[in-house]
Image 1 (cartoon, rainbow, N blue to C red):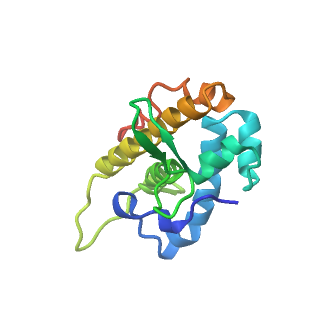
Image 2: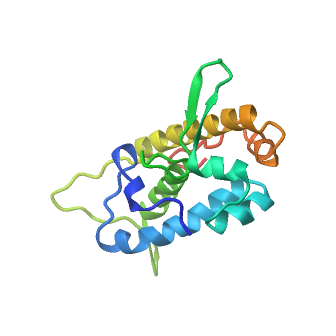
Image 3: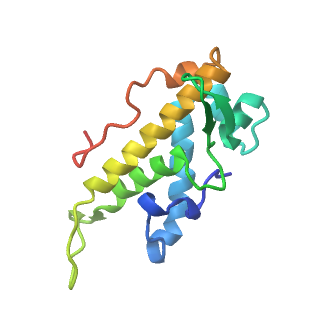
Length: 173
């Protein structure tokens, strides 16, 4: 079960999801959402999250979001992975993967890029960079939330292994 859907791809993470991408977007979401959980959570959390119905309170709070008192003493809100505001680190992660995959097309003689008529080709690296910044902000918020609410959790320990969650450029370096 996916925690996000096509509606999460709006504003800075906008995708035109009609035509071919519309048919593929659900597949991209399923594939990269699962990869996100496998990459950034412990195996036990991963198994519980991919069922679509977490049972431990910590994972319920991660999915649904929760208000908490931040490290600065101010009331903060972790929005969650699934929310009515349609903001999620999962969406940013999937978005970056889709842009990377859909930038070129694989043909029988190698990779090719669509030839445009009456249009201008635009560098997509700024879109990936903005998505990467959004992803890092979401993940930093998650780390702060877990450090306050669940400091001894395995999830917190897994996330703290990553200094920078996303460091991506047009060369995927």
